[in-house]
Amino acid sequence: MKYRVIHKFRDLQDDNHIYSVGDEYKGKKSQARIKELSTDANKIGRPLIEKITEEKQS
Image 1 (cartoon, helix red, strand yellow):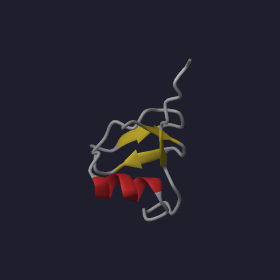
Image 2 (cartoon, rainbow, N blue to C red):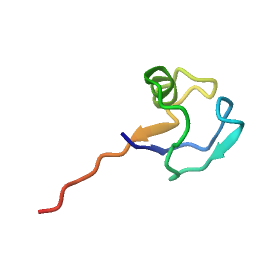
Image 3 (cartoon, rainbow, N blue to C red):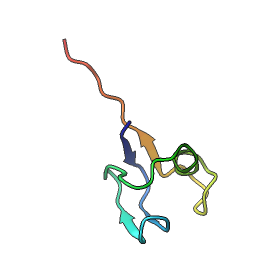
């Protein structure tokens, strides 16, 4: 699955990589890490990424 950044942040678990809004999140994608970044259960206290849903074209 792919994830998009919805709030700018510095990833402390990815060599302090800075993600800007709209970037694809390419860091650690463990279930626990995705849950941390996609909810308010992180140091910033708000969701930082969201799952990218791909729409099929007919």
